[in-house]
Amino acid sequence: MATTAILSALEQEQQGLRAQLTGARQVQRAGREFWLGDLHGAPVVLALSRIGKVAAATTATTLIEAFGADRIVFTGVAGALGPDVRVGDVVVASHFVQHDMDASPLFPRFEVPLYRQAQFACDPGLTELLAQACRQTMAQWQQQHTNPPQVPPPAVHQGLIASGDRFIGTAQVSRDVQQGLRAHAMHALAVEMEGAAVAQVCHDYGTAFAAVRTISDRADDIAHVDFAQFVNDVAGVYAQRILVNFIARLVADPGGPSAPGRPGAC
Image 1 (cartoon, rainbow, N blue to C red):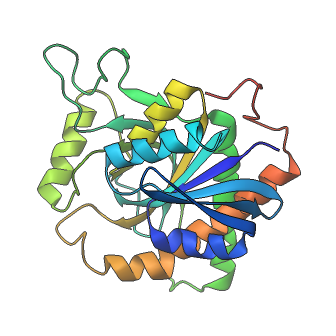
Image 2: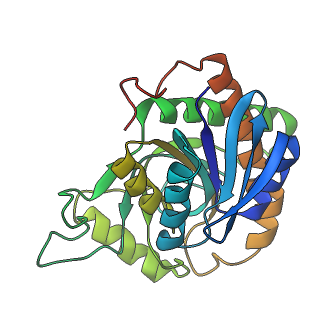
């Protein structure tokens, strides 16, 4: 069976997964720790992306070059940009863009030089499996937690996610990011610091890629408040349950969407 790399932005997301590995072994490479083993019947390699686009690109490249990852699935947290995206929701990426990429006037704003594109698409088949796992997880979460009548249950969104080497921690910066993207007909649902780099690496290698982000804040002036508690109590739990459900679907259909050599692997 093909090797699935599970890339996480946060330590809390991987602790529970490492505990579920069978035949686990640790490998040190490129200054990072990688954990190999079987997760509920699927061969996986676990890694932390570290923070920022360069660090994430290094980790993704190592997963492909050194560990032969056939597909990469990325989890983490993000700030909301879309008007209907709330704290506690999850966003499954369809595409990524670097909101701080600007080589104008040599190239159009947001376009990655020499690629002739600003957005990098996630693999459709792998993304659909991840979205199904997210919807299953949110349904399970809703059954286990009774929300107050005025609080809607967590929702699953799909769309564009923006990445940049800056923590968006004020409402004004958030508006600036949104307005810049909208001026180029791009409407991002969330903002974070790594995904676009991993998407570009996977594009270069022809490796299937999918990503999901839990919304921790509204990317505004209180974005930093209670972040650690949210990660421990919500985001880390979401990520582990989503990935277990995702792996179960992958094991049930190992020759399904985005299997190596099949159409759909980007």
